[in-house]
Amino acid sequence: MFKKFIFILFLFFFVFQSEDLYPFSTKAKSALLIDFDSNQILFSKDKNAKIFPASMSKLMTLYILFDALDKGIVSFEDKFPVSMNAYQREGSTIYAELGTEISVENLIRGIVVSSGNDACVIVAESLSGSEEIFAEQMNLYAKEMGLLGTNYANSSGLHDDEHYSTVQDLSILAKKLIIDFPDYYNFFSDKSFTWNNITQYNRNNILRSDIGVDGLKTGYTSSSGFGIIVSSNKDDKRLIGVVTGLDSVEERTSEITRLINYGYRGFKRYLIFSDNQIIDYAKVWNGRKDILPMVIYDDQELLLDIPGRRGLRIEYSFKEPIIAPVNKGDVIGEALIIIPNRENVLLPLYAGEDVSKVNFFTGFIQSLDYFLYRDG
Image (cartoon, rainbow, N blue to C red):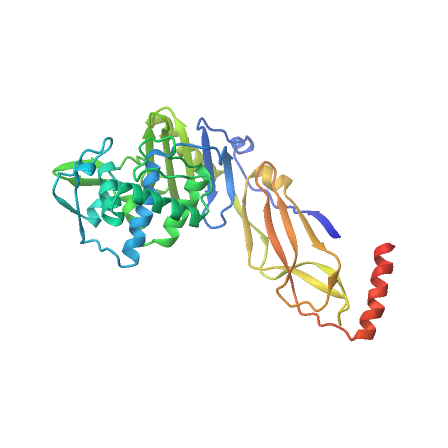
């Protein structure tokens, strides 16, 4: 039997602009905004819908290359050959010359800044022997990351009906890339790259803007429309935003800027629970103590907008009977934080202390009491 309790958390209101009261909307076909630290979703629109990620796929190619660097399989100074397949690859290019070699460091810059499809093929062939085998490796990495709506058919994101993802999966990949390879993340803030005497500028045109964007990747094909995934760090808060399916560069720039601004202007961080905070007490049977404190571990903070602050409520429940012995730290229940028009947040409730078991005779008497209590 589950026992459930509900309480409403009242939070102080702060001065806000009138537009903060209105729900956010976007022209993007799919969009997602998350708080980096808590993984809390601040806005979503069709986050699990199938999309064609175009050049945003290159984040996985870069992830695999960064992983090879981190493991010492390759170095920045290693040079990879330019094959005919890479030389002839259509779409965005770094203008790699057939028969030459390019260093790993320059290939990274060519992928990040110039979005070079040829650079992706060079990396794929050099690491895996062929782009087809590399795509299989991309899918293995995707599976390990839990990217359930993603399948890769090539290294660059050129359109293929079997090459798809979701904005949810893109955000997971971007966050993992930032966490796993912080030493390489600075590549994403490069504004230009020169190769073969040709200088190209980063297609992420809001880099180092007043909204704090410091990466990651744009994407476009005629089938996908214009999309972008960015990470922004401002006011001690990092956000990841994704928009896809837009009609122009200008519309893409406008919508991602609006989305990130919404994350900074519309939300304030609140402490919901403190580390080791006692939520309530639960009855324990067959134990040397009759009651057991239920606690939350770690400070639990949430970003909340005006409607969220007004309507937030918390339900917590535990399964009866709780029978000794109980060890401190055992999961004995859960707290469900319900936020209007947003995804709920589920937290475990832990036993706040040890409760040892009583002797057989006392336990027998308490068991009789429990059955009378339950039936009553």
